[in-house]
Image (cartoon, rainbow, N blue to C red; front, side, top):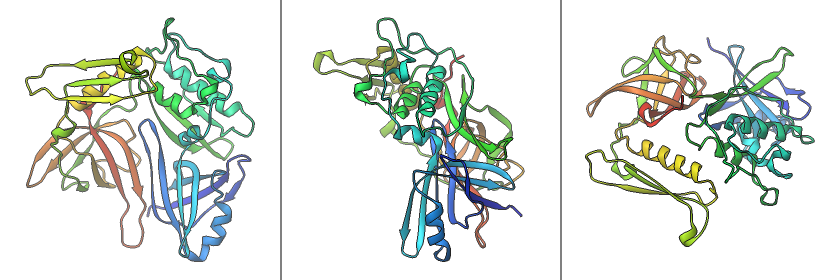
Length: 363
């Protein structure tokens, strides 16, 4: 039988403060280009003790499944709810949205001209973790890409007087054309402590998995209906950046596809780079040209796709058959949320999907 364990660690000292916290109503998982999340409840008889162990903003929480770590992150909220304690945590990447560049250009590492965004992402983590009491011992992949950020005319600069969050810098790097992608993983380290890693992927994270499938009547328990919605459809995307009036930066990406012309405006008032603005418009246009999509499914542990066998970023064959539609195509996993078994409720995974043809990759 599958077993779960929930461990708590002091974020600063790395001391284990709770080796096994009894939790229920647990949901957790990672996401593409995001930190992922966890929610859970500690029952009344142990809520008071757990409240002392789960110090928000200073505690790391980990999920172990059959002796393998599946998820890790920072506890941000532990609130009494009646006699229970409701816990909310988010992945390591959420920490960078609580940290700011106080020195400018990531401590003098910039400004950046024709720089690989993978390097800037590593610089952001290095700057974060070199500050006093800011080291989470997160390792960032050494992946490189052929994408570039900044030009001699418009360097990518981070101004200290604006005190931007480091998370915003990471978001900027995933918005450039042919950008790298990232997600988080945790595993037991050689020192016997949990080790966190930021996985960088270029030209993409994950791969097309011909060995796995999600199929109605086999391993799909439930799914949302296939959505055919023209409200979000557009062949023309106008991206508006920094500035005002006639001086506002603007980029348009458009194609003709034999359909009625539909337009969409994206406002990014902080964007000063024309190249990044144009890339954002193109990425948005490609995504908005797809119609007919399944956004999420609930799957069971099954030989067709064992829990733990698929990763964020993977393309998996999706076959849905019901009274409304026969859908057969490639879908990309952009996140998942595991619900461990409780009582008579079996373990299952809520998988977030997007059509694989929404994505384009550099190379």
